[in-house]
Amino acid sequence: MSINPIVEMNADALSRAIHARQVSCREVMQAYLAQIERFNPQVNALVSLRPAEELLTEADTCDRQLDQGRSRGWMHGMPQAIKDLAATAGLRTTMGSPLFAEQVPPHDAISVARVRDCGAIIIGKTNVPEFGLGSQTYNSVFGTTTNAYDPTLVAGGSSGGAAVALALRMLPVADGSDMMGSLRNPAAFNNVFGFRPSQGRVPHGPAPDVFVQQLATEGPMGRSVTDVARLLSTQAGYDARAPLSLTQSPQIFNDTLVRNFSEVRLGWLGDYNSYLPMDDGVLSLCESALEDFTALGCKVEACQPDFSMDRLWQTWLVHRHWLVQGSLGALYADPQKRDLLKPEAQWEIEGGLRLTAADVYQASVSRSDWYRALSELFERYDFLLLPTAQVFPFDAQTPWPRVVGGRTMDTYHRWMEVVIGPTLAGLPSMNVPVGFSPAGLPMGLQIIGPAQADQAVLQLAYAHEQLTQWVRHRSPGCLQNA
Image 1: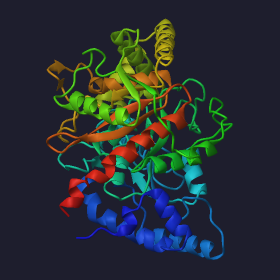
Image 2: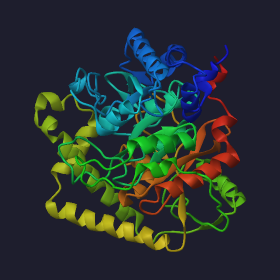
Image 3: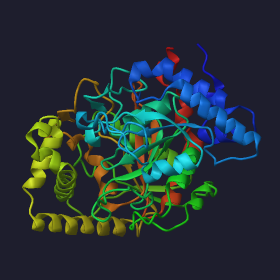
Image 4: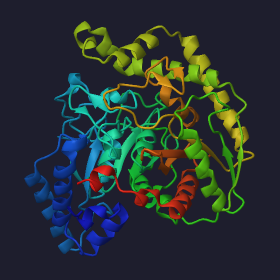
């Protein structure tokens, strides 16, 4: 079966085709709905889908607006599914929890309102783990989302549905969020781009707390760096409801991504001097990708932060326990609701209940020391490089790997320890695809920039993309075998 050329377009090209009237918004919606009908049953990436008749009616409205010379923005008439952690007005937002299986918010999240205002047509939601906890996208409401390259394997998470929908051309571009690699890990597992922006770049909310929560952030995913930058230009920008959001104009992300990287210095963190256990082949594949950066003219050398990685992990546990307990503690306090929380959520909450104020303060000091340790590295290097994951995609029936690289994992998320560094430092970090294992499974590498150097990270990712073209190099297995 052939693939409709409309869904093969990247989002930027699709936007230009729509505005040039080369394709109608109705044709675009029909093409994507057909793609969803064809592939979603295999992978379960998209959930809470709206009726096709409603979506086609909205597409017709978008066409009429263009006939009248009116465009709402670059996403005008483009299908968009929202991660099922973000509020969508009038559309079910379950957070993957049976406790919220029928929740319909009265308002949009800030980032959702921005893509809607930019002309996107919200077609449904992308699947997530319960409350976004864990890098394996499964829940008792919708079931498991599986990998675009092998539907017997995991999609990653928590933006697993978004990454798979992108890889299988069921969405032109996708939003996500990232606390512990949730934009980066599923992007690596499905051979697409996922960008965790600097803390505050994309305002979060509306939310009960506007000051304490500084680990999770929303951000963009795409099949090209250009698409990621364009979506970020829509998501980013100050909002008074999020007082710590950055004031820099989001229009910078529409500036050129072309840059000369001759003599730019890159620090390779690897596995932190064998601290991180890794599956066979992950580290060697990422190390082979260093040659691509050298080909761009960069100077790459191994380096290490002056910081105890075990201390970093303990810092992470305290922050995560504290924030999860703060957001879900009221549910846990009700015995009937507690029974409906997955064991990992209960474990996080119970960890939070054991913390003291002194524990939280000391963890914040440690987090600050970690930021300072990375700042010292950035005095010598322009960017840092790090694998995106420690394992290749694994069996979708496995909640989380118990053993990695011969070492037993002591928590449900220890196998993703590699992603916590950029999160705790609040730094921009982007997954770029770097190839495949001998079994044909994707892997990625993180490009990490200094604080608020989001555009620079996008530019290096763009240069790497132009050289390697990994997203085009191989179509997902589901597409090949259709």
